[in-house]
Length: 471
Ligand code: GDG
Image 1 (tube, protein in one colour):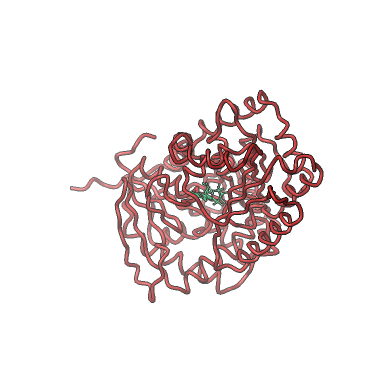
Image 2 (spheres, rainbow, N blue to C red; image 1 turned 30 degrees about the vertical axis):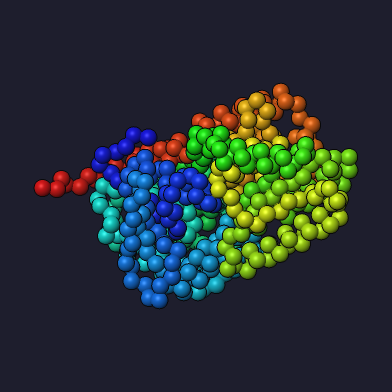
């Protein structure tokens, strides 16, 4: 990425993860990706500190670490409840993952979401200089661009959505959906992971709002916004290095020793109902039923660090998975074998890399996922001479790029069971052939490629009005 001398990058996202390096606990995919983009471009990363204050003051806490300046602000408890736990995670997250059965539509949530976005706009506005490029991240901040415009901000503003865009009829159930989409026309550029999410957006904008789409530009009244599909990648080089490091090698050996000659199937996911964990366990159980001869030859390691624990639906999925894994283990285990190792904790990234490498199968079965970086990490961590097989949900955004995986419908226990059997039986030649194509894509379309494409498109989205030179 060529670093621009004129324009800084202002990244704005709900949470700001200080870039502590690649091995710090369970940094999410988004956090890792953004730290890399900021290191390349210079600038500021602004967002919520994760802390609660009695009364919102807008006071910013700056820090500079490893080439990245972060600027964070505390929120009031009511903001956290209504904006973050409420509208973001109890309204938008389930709806955008096609779960209207779980989506909660409450005026307080919508009001708190709007108020908090206005607070973010008030706070970050003074930090913005005329030439800065602004890049807003994800569903917590749909209206932020419009709020910045209301405060006189004429900069190029881009928005990237990390989750799916739901079908038009589902979005139509959200009170205020039109206003939300209308506010998005204040952006210069909107990025989605896949063509499918982009088309869904266009479908809503044209049919429900009368927008016109031409040559990748959506026009509504006198506003137009450029749209791109820009699939996020991982830092493949860093990940491959991590998988060759000491910690990864130790983790690899630990897994191989404890596997005792059995084939390991691995799943790694935040504990979230969108990740299809119940369906995964059921598909694996179906495999055990249909292939009793394989029973003691394999085991499933599911790593699922808890997330969003204050939201009731997340407590329910956790209980349900404990019940399901307990029942499957109770039913099929023997004194010397347990079918599922279910672990509710996170591991450092390099340990994770070693675990991926030790697994014969990477089992990634989300019911819907904007992209899914675990699928890419699994591929990047493999041994080129004896790679494992990726089984991937066709409803993950990653499936658009990863056609050489075994693509399955995660709602079908039979398809999951068949794919496990096919992967276990796959010849080394075929494994190498499929992996080589997948790895080529993971390396070529990595996180730098993603950020560069977005920022290049943002720079070109409309002509920049350059500020007069300072005396
Ligand atoms: C959202 C979208 C999109 C997980 N367990 C541990 C751990 N992780 C890391 C993984 C991976 C990341 O968390 C999860 O990324 P995903 O992409 O799979 O999923 P979301 O968190 O839902 O991310 C998603 C993404 O944004 C980026 O746009 O792909 O669709 O939902 O990197 O490795 N990391 C460590 N220990 C763990 O135990 N260190």
